Length: 360
Image 1 (cartoon, rainbow, N blue to C red):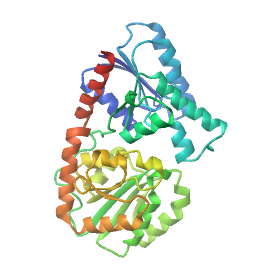
Image 2 (cartoon, rainbow, N blue to C red):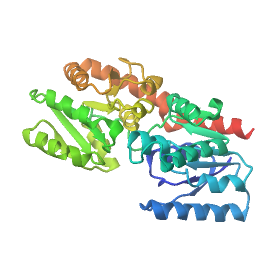
Image 3 (cartoon, rainbow, N blue to C red):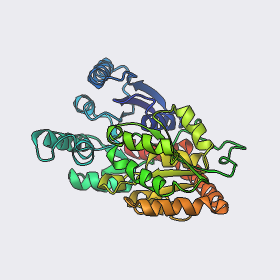
Image 4 (tube, rainbow, N blue to C red):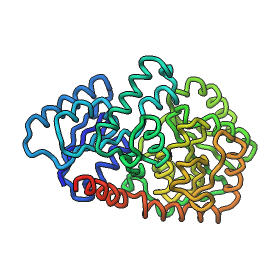
């Protein structure tokens, strides 16, 4: 199968990376149009122009076009130019992200209405829409008035060439239990819930909290982070490469998957870090929500705690810290589930079944 894959975000972005690998794993002939530039105002026009030139050549049109993340402004230029099947992977709703979650644009205003129309039009113009959870599919279908059967769930997954179990690195292996969490400090992550839980457990010298990340919420939380770091309640570093993240996960005993915010969007997604932790055979504590329950069975694949409840999170951490057998059980079950359903090979089979059904 010949696929033209075009994306507004860089190919190294986890969602795009996993989908591209799934296509290649299935033996597809894939042509990629993307940019590694970090300036959106330059990247999106560049990618759109390159795509238009490629389509205009008409030198052997692909069997299917796949517009990946972040392609909301690219797809409107492509749809009028081809009758071939067109698959869209929005990954997020622009309206939900910018208006409801991050609240950068006031709901009900002209800009928010434009974003909602763009979300609706791109889903309507595509022949198939990929989503990460059924909860997200329900949101798209109901909010933007789209047929529910147009949406196909494809787990986010993780790159198992980077995130895999390290032999002989099953946790710190010492008396101190390391609790690991990383985030880009977006509102839906619930970083403050993690800080509250770490503070509640700060008197336990048998626990070490390691937090990695920075982002929009950092300016507000920085004084507290630095204060907690000074008192030894946690260790914080603002950034780590993907390879470094994998090493930090490998050296940890308990991984916090989230999302811990009570915001609605946090309940519709499975955090990408959860897949990474599963791939690395680590015990996970996750926020209890419909999305996480689509994949994870509570107390079998992960411990789940009410979102927005630092006391419950602290209690779960304390419980797992004292029960190495339970940590091992959760880690093994989660890793087995990842291999069966969320690995690049498993995602490749699911994606190809959907594409073959679409292409007839």
